[in-house]
Image (tube, rainbow, N blue to C red; front, side, top):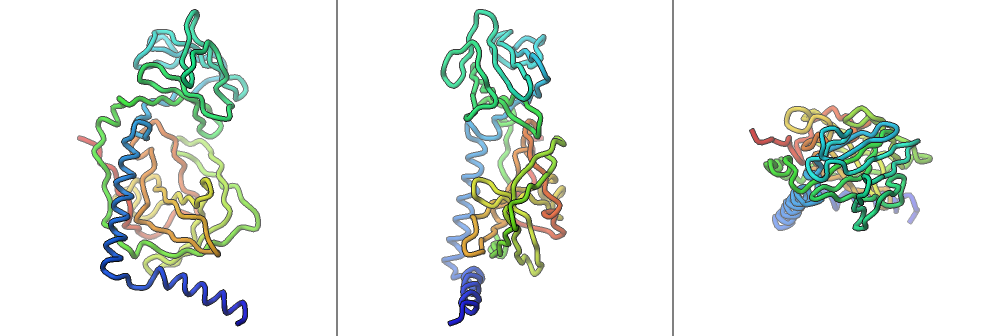
Length: 295
């Protein structure tokens, strides 16, 4: 059989597997799997290291940045010693210096000074219930603060979802770029983020043909997108969605797993905004809906 015929048959088989009418049991299993995924999503969000525990973002200026619980510091912490130390920023390098005759806990060890950034692994400073570490937003460097006692975590009201609809789970053809491209987007704070894309995907959703631009995220396809529900029924800035790396040129995109970025819940986060290719001119009534804060 000619190679071209084999390819066509293979693609047809792939699509038919995804589009053939499922039995009631298969539909029930699919819905149960999505609902279990959504419960895990909410559990991870509320976890001790989840996005709800981010309680501060302090941008560093060139030179010394004092920190501690005293209001006289450049970075004022909600607990800990009045004068804890200094973050020094020099030419994109961040060093930590403990206050005189004091030490700080960095990754479980007591130190008087250390380099925080750049580093092969993120260094975590622990002060009581607080965890501090270096975060970058575009080219700007900041100190991000976590606490399990975050007011945002305590006030969390739970996630809202559209009902699961299997029609929003669709096959997508991956079209590789001739070479990887750099995708430049703004984040929610207006800083410029650079991401890498290895190709686009073409899919059909509710009878409409779409071409979307995923970026790479540890080998997965990461879609940052907005649609005509954004700003009313869903979060206005964007939603996120992941798909598996393509096999034989195809993957599956399941909009039932579209979810809100951290900035939908937390003002101390720095989420990227969608590239122009992913600002979709149709309604995607699937996945996570707008977060409703406690009155």
